[in-house]
Image (tube, rainbow, N blue to C red):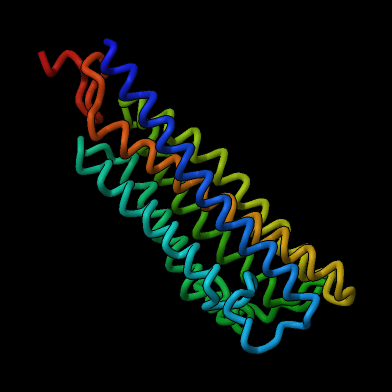
Length: 238
């Protein structure tokens, strides 16, 4: 019992330390972004622009999504709990969408197909991108909901509830603030700081995702004896 308590404390400290390091890096990137905006983004410093595709902060976020996806796959291998695998699929989608701009490419195709026009200070392209994101979200969340209902693993379900809270925050920044960012296009300063909130918020939420997944991985590396293994009823092990 004492060793289990010490193990849980160690996992908590490690997870908090990882989150602190990730948030520190995010803060440095965001602060540098704001500072460099005042010198009008000299070309040599564009790799530090958090809004620029392929920049250093963007690559940092790619690695967070990759860690989350691989971590969920590892969790799945521990007990064949499909709920972990469904979250892994979502994280892989976020990685691919972030690095390859799936919703933007899909939006460009859809706007040509549907011929949507501008409205509410948004372009037809913006409505198309929202449609692509919403469609992907419905599919992936439906899979998560189904595997959640099927799961008998309380640890996996608690893990999912934590991730769902983070996902709600991510959607707020990635969709809600993003649309506001576009609507404020005529106002340069407001648009800049809205962009900071959007991309900075996404970075912070990705860090929290990574910390939660990492903590779950650590907790299942050496599960306490009084808790069931993932996907395996306690009674089946005795």
